[in-house]
Amino acid sequence: MKKIVAIVTMSVTCLALYAQTYSYEEVLSLERKVEGRKNSDWAMQQPYVIMLSIDGFRYDYAERYGATNIQSIIDSGVSTERMIPSFPSKTFPNHYAIVTGMYPGNNGLVSNEFYSREKDYWYNIRDKKAVTDASWYSGVPIWVLAEQHQMLSANFFWVGSEAPIEGIYSTYSYPYTSRVANEHRVDRIVEWLGFSERERPHLILGYFSLVDDAGHRYGPEHEKTKEAVLEIDRVIGKLLKGIESSGLPVNVVLVSDHGMANISRGIVLPEVLDLDDAKVAYSFPPMIYQPDSAKLEKLYNELLKVENIDVYKADAVPDYLMFENEDCIGDLVLISKAPTVILDKAKPVSGGTHGFNPFDHEEMGAIFYGSGPSFKEGVEISPFQNIHIYPLLAEILGLKYSHEIDGKSAVLGGILRK
Ligand SMILES: [Zn+2]
Image (tube, rainbow, N blue to C red; front, side):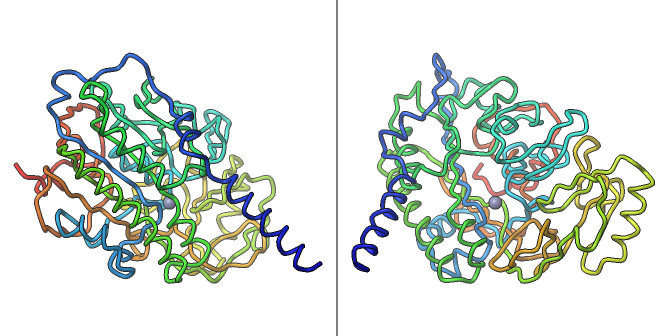
C-alpha cells in the first residue's frame, strides 16, 4: 500500500513539474510580434548585441564554481572584477538602470515595490497592471532607442519590455512567465539570428532567474547554487555554439543585476515599532509612507533607537546612493546590513538575499562580461556602476541619443575596438 502511495505521489510531482514548463511550440505561441517593422538599410550594416542577464549572479560565481563557458567570454573579451549595482540592489530597479543608463531614483523604478503619491497606487513586480503600464517607466530603454532608429530588437523578459514605453514595444517580445525553460529562451534567440536580414533583430535581450532563486533559497555558497550556475553556464554554451554557426558579427554581453549575501537574522518591524496607519513597502529598503508630519516625526525618533537599522528621512538619504524621487520614495527609508533583514512578520531567516547598500557590501557585486567583434580582447577593468552600460550599447550599435541620462560614455568607451 505504501508503495502505491509513493508511486502516486511521484507521478503527481512529475505532472506538476511537467505543467511548469511549456513545450517549445507553446513558447512560440506566446511570442508577440509588432507587424510591419523592417530594419533600415543603415541598421542592416550595424553589428549585433545579445545582452543576457543572469539574475543574482554574484561577481565571484564564475570562477568559484568553474563556469567554463562564461569563463570563455571573460577570456576572449572584457570583464570587470565586480560591477556595482545601483541602490537599492534589487532586481527591477537594476535591470531598468542597465537599459536606461539612469539611477533607480530617476528611472522610475525605485524598488521592487513602492507607492506613488501622484497615482495613489502601488507598483509591485507581481502586479501585471502596473508592470505593463508605461507611465511607471522613465527614460528611453535601449530597445526603444534601437526601434526609433529603425533597428529591430527582440526581448525575452527584460524588465520593462511588457510596457509600451514611449509607445514602443520590441519587435519581438514575450509576456513574462517562469514556465519557459531556459534552454528554450536560448533556442529562440539563436533562431532570431537566422531570420532574414530585414527581419533579424540587432539587439536581443534575455533573462534567467534560476541562479537568483537558488541563492535566495540556499545562500550563495551552497551546492544547489553551484548547480544553478553550472546549468546556466551549460545553456550559455549552447548559445555560444549557435552564435558561432550563425557567422554573424555578434557581441555577447553578460550581466547581472546584483549579487547575494547570506542572511541569518530578522527584525520584525511591527514588533519594534507602532506603525499606526503608516503605509509600509517591505521590499528592501523598507520604506514608510506617513503624510502626517507629527506621526512621521514620532516614527523617526523611535527608529533612531532601533539597533541594526539605519533610518533616513527621504531628503536625507546619503547623496552617493543617488536615491531621490519625490513621488515614490517613502518618507522614511530603512537600511539594514547583512546578515540582518527587516521583516513584516516573524518568519525563519536563512539562505540569501540582496537589496543592501552595494557600496558597503561587496557581496552585492554583480557581473559584466562582454565579448565579440566590438570588444577588445583579454581586458579586465576596475569596478564600475551599471548605469554606464547604456552609452556602451548605444555606441556599439551606432545609436544616437540626446536625452539626459546618468551614465557616461567615457567610463566604458575604452573597452571597444576603434
Ligand atoms: Zn535580481
